[in-house]
Length: 225
Image (cartoon, rainbow, N blue to C red):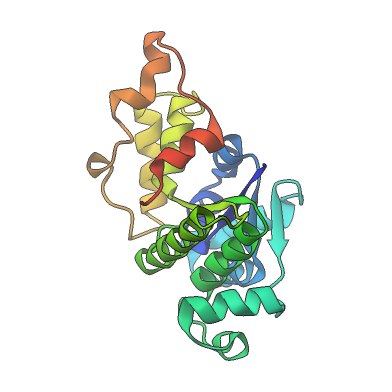
């Protein structure tokens, strides 16, 4: 069963606006994003100088790296949106606030109900809560015998931790510089000393220790309960 990653606008801007897309894809391989999220990234790129590089990065990404998920109304997508926010999809699409996060979680639900294991890459607190609620519902239905996949939550910091463990970041100084560039774009990222990004466990390869397990299986350990 192949895992699918659905990315929200916040993490997309963190990586694309700082020209660190190679790090993102080096860890995740490829991602998907709702068309609403793509629109949000382009709008931010056009309106805020901090994010001006993001649109150029988007325009150069092949589909094998970033697949856009259409937000056209379908019965399953509409049902997922209704369950998340108790609002008809046609009405919800008219309100921009938190729309990207809603569509990220809705697409994740549709994929999980088809049997796919999904990782939702999201930093926003409200969006993370939505994803956690959806994840618990899918898990309950799996326990009842439904042939569903799963939804797990990951973050910008989780991706960076795996990048460090995989040797994609040179050293702690390199990580600190990369993270500070992201913080200049994302006011929601906490200071690096409040994360595990500099923890020795993420830098075992510098001490000739066995490298950490790779990618999707290992990322699953970072999810919300």
